Length: 155
Image 1 (tube, rainbow, N blue to C red):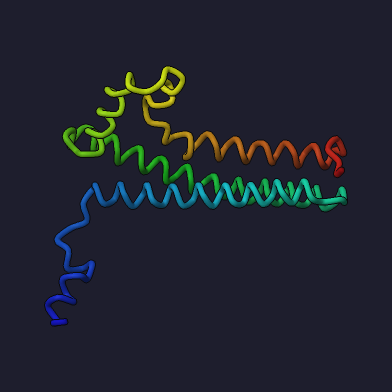
Image 2 (image 1 turned 180 degrees about the vertical axis):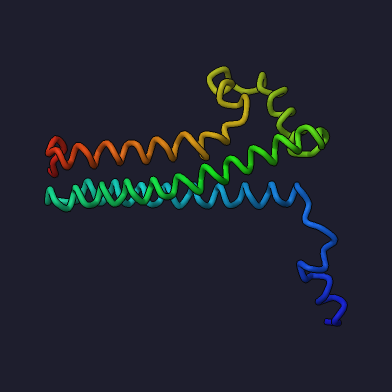
């Protein structure tokens, strides 16, 4: 392999980082962080159901609530950045392939069974950036508080 071939693959040899690449990068980070949140939430829920001691239940739910809440902050920030990028791209690049596919999916909803049509409408990306992480965090906070008040007890 020649030196010229190796230089062309180096990131610094690229002319510029495009907004489309930034959108793809931020979406990837958002999805990775969301997957991490789901893993942590699942592990905390499994540990809480499997414990036999009230103190272990309290500590498990409290630590899970803290970790999920701390994960919520970077998730919301990534979602906010993605929203800004997409808003800018919508106004400056209306013919971008991402928006074309979005239009096609909205236009062809009638081909789906009636039951699935509401789900195929507008984008649901804010659900994974704001609503689901907030619900997971809030649920663990409430469960931890109830465990400390001895309202929730182990089996």
